[in-house]
Image 1 (cartoon, one colour):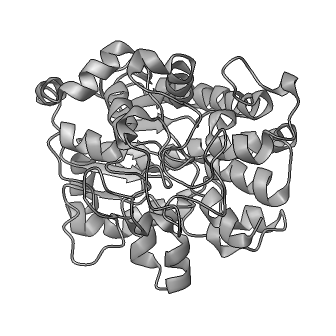
Image 2 (cartoon, rainbow, N blue to C red):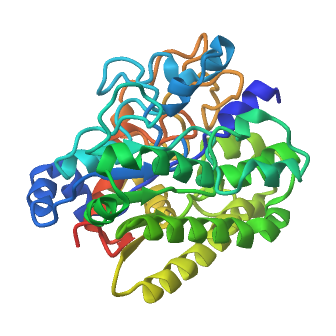
Length: 387
């Protein structure tokens, strides 16, 4: 696999839904808006990777070759909502777009955009974002700068630099940020991508670094609280073994016993489960520690995904392990050399709203809408944003 191929692998982070009540919540629109009236937020601030990306990678890159590799800048990305590529890894809106709209807030501009007003919200998320700093990956022998676009700590620093223009003095910011919503991640997916795809570790070997990754996320939450954040959503990661990209890369070499009844790869999902178990434990500890001053919410993305992969037809989807866009063909329609947006792969499936996966890595807009509903209302966000 080429270096350019690995660049897109760094964008992993895919979201999935849950139950019928969530579907009704997300598609109804009015329900979310009426509930949002009960909980007013000054603004919304997001951190993370390509799942939350709203344009930072395009705003920061001046290298035409790199921008060409970033196929989210090519059609058919953006076709469903924007009618053009918007530097989002989707056919339309991402999860944070739907949440912002449900809360009566504007779509979040990227923090690196010029001449933008960030007082109602901004996204620090960037493609390739990681929980661990790049120095950690250098210690593993990784030199590739594609993993150094913006770690968790870097994104928090970006936010701190913007705070005076958002809310003024430190004292004013405490009050303003306390009435704003923070989406902190998900973080972790790219941290495992580096280990599994670049370093060549097995899922079992990657687990030895999980405590460090989870601690980095928990420490990041503490930093936001110290700045004045009160309402913070902390998502887990998604079942890596259910993503078309990993199934196409590792499925052929796997034994029959490596697959579960849904067709997902069990060894990779065990890594997911381990990470999420440790993270949920950390979030619960932070909830107890800051019980009187914060409202921390854990988002169970893995639970959402697995439910719909098990019963896609129940939610109006089909082919849960097959990408909508791309020219990979075969069982998963994913090939790193024929990714969505590349030459010969600029036409999506007939109905993206019937698919879970847009490009083999990221969800379709329709699925993003359902995920947002799950976070707003529950039950896979504890407690729900609007709970």
